[in-house]
Length: 347
Image (cartoon, rainbow, N blue to C red):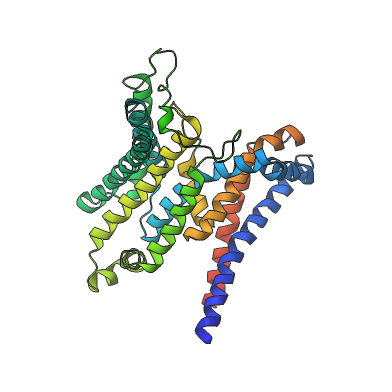
């Protein structure tokens, strides 16, 4: 009975924490809007309308959620293993690069083969990019915070080189690739919107990650290494193997995010392909408590902010840049909540 009560209490706290931090973040931004002379009620109402006020707005929110969810899962599994993967952005870009290459070059392939191959190429390239981080840490002692940040810039320059060089469109007019083959595009779930099959794929991945982390031996080993690497090693867990596995998985998830964004939304690769999904993913994962299921709701929250920002600017005259303030205020509120919670426990 006692363990059941504790489990229920932990579940309630896990659900309450992201809700409270999101509300606190919005409240903080409302104060900032008020200080600028604008109406916080009008601004936040416009934000909500732009996120869920119509079928198109709602589907756009879910489309924005998709890459944030996959990259958030990527960061979350790495952080669970106490690997500070700040490189989801680079892994996202490498996945998109691979998907663009396969999607353009594989035009002769039948769609039932081309689309899975395009998505799998994104997973593979993202995983390899994450594997570089693990290799540098395990065999050269390079801290992943440093290596992942540097690899983000390298990936960005590789994409820039590719779209201005070997993968540039046939007309050579713009720094972008040719559109991928129709057979490589993810079908739409709702005609006339941006809602594509990548969204249920991302939700299925979140469900699989929840089972993997909490119901399998490998998931237990990842969490054990994250809790106490020395203790896990003493218990017979091969820590270096788990670090490599975790970074391959983390990179693969971000690579899948890049492939899904390309095949579902843009259909071609270009410079500035990512608006910073890999960096926002850190906030998504933290707000979700590094739990795959809660990360779904966290990604939806950040997706709603991204989808509603333009409506807020048009209707309330408040810059869409304020969305980044909301994201930062939410993370700050989360940190404050965690500090307060830890301090209460210690007392």
